[in-house]
Amino acid sequence: MDNKIVLSPSLLSADFSDLGGALKEIEKTDGSWVHIDVMDGHFVPQVTYGQPVIKSIRKCSALPFDVHLMIEKPEMSIPSYIESGADYITFHAEATAHADLCIQMIHNAGKKAGVALCPSTPVSVLEELLPYIDLVLVMTVNPGWGGQKLIPYTVEKVRKLADIRRREGLGFLISVDGGVNSKTLPLVLEAGTDVVVSGSSFFTGELKWN
Ligand code: DX5
Ligand code: ZN
Image (cartoon, rainbow, N blue to C red; front, side, top):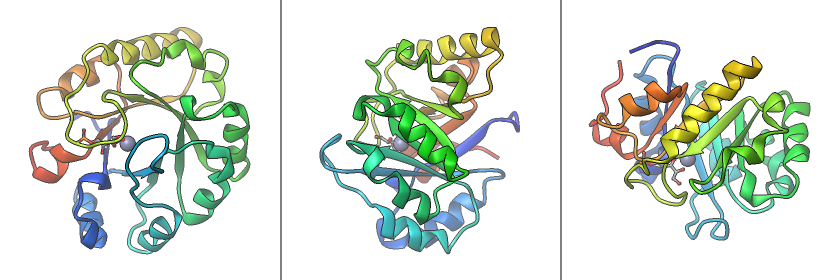
């Protein structure tokens, strides 16, 4: 495995009654991050966990916390996610009219800013923002649930972003989220992915990394 590529296992597929144990499992993978899916019951139907849980598990691990906010109006709660110990904070472009403000809030706190795109949202919505973003999260499934199948056309969005980055000499990371397993991993890597989020395939042991 190319060691520039980062694995970010998603706690969504972990046993919620033993998140400390899940973090120990993730720590066995060299250089990994921890992907933390926050769902608010509005932007997506489910509710997962929020600031108090992140704050509590922050004490169990020094790994980078890659927080994926699937919440409406992220500008209202970004400060509390910063305070909870997030390192990367990724919000959805579809969930706010204030993406620039969200990026500024995250950067002013010295954290890394990511913007996520649902499968049907075109890369072009980020045209003006790309120079200011640390990470683009390409959703390769519809947000809200683990264990879904990767939607093939989303891989082209990764390729498009990698082309723009090369052409314009930009530095953002490209992350993919959803349906990555040992079969689909080569496709997303070939397209230009830097950060691979994996929930079900990581925790079932299907996706071997080290
Ligand atoms: C889905 C989440 C993902 C989820 C991916 O809305 O954003 O992070 O955990 O799960 P898998 O890897 O099982 O598709
Ligand atoms: Zn996610």
